[in-house]
Amino acid sequence: MPELPEVETTLRGLTPYLLHQKITQVQIRAPKLRAPTPPAKPLINLTVTKLERRAKYILAHLSNGTTLLIHLGMSGRLTILPAAHATPPGKHDHIILTTPKGTITLNDARRFGLFLHLKEGALTTHPLLTALGPEPLGPQFTASYLHTQLRTRKTPIKVALMDSHLVVGVGNIYASESLFRAHIHPQTPAHKLTLKQCQTLVTCIHQTLTEAIAAGGSSLRDFAHSNGQLGYFQHSFHAYGRTGKPCLTCATPIQKITQAQRSTFFCPHCQKNEEGGCLTAPPSRNTQCAKCARSKNCP
Ligand SMILES: [Zn+2]
Image (cartoon, protein in one colour):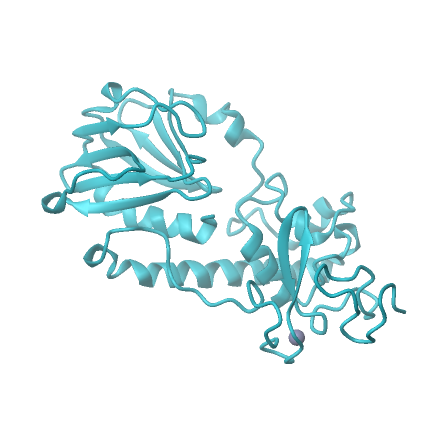
């Protein structure tokens, strides 16, 4: 699933092909993705006046005051081909926009993505957008904001971070990675984080996302020479996807647990819980505590 850095990279890749460009052709090849797709005709001859990202939504503001909202869902991807390289659409190419600079295609095999044409003024009232928390790289997301918000939350911090009412765009991968960097155990009840821990966590979220966006940015340099696909790039993780591999800091094997139906990866040594003891809940694949080898609830 594309996360914030992938969406940001996609937006940056789209910009030269879409911003200040007139939409000359539109093909809507699927009547419905996660929601019904709009008719093509009203989009033709509109110019994209502004492009921005809000959470994982790409917003293209159009010259008549309306807005295109694009979400990549689980498997969506946007592909750009310069005008001279247009090819026949593939099976899962559902939306195709043409500008004088090239062709932009939304491909989505699982159809969990969104392509909506919002009326003027709808941005401030649309249910997808109104309940969103602050951007993780924006000025509102500070240690004191996080600390205040967490005070009433007893859910594990990893689960809290993935709640878009608290902060948007910290998905499964980057929540695991940020907690690893901050040395905070993912099962720590959110309300137990101190202001200092919140400060560390905010800094680590900034660093993790900024580095991933930079990695995506460097992938943009040559994307147009390959298959034109935006937003997917090689990025190495410290904890995510490294079950059983040695922690890059202390060599303890990285563990995997399941929280809110999502996989969490962490180092049981570096990310000790508050009291500095070992896990109270055994990891899903290993019923023994990594430190003392007791089966559960070790002291
Ligand atoms: Zn470690």
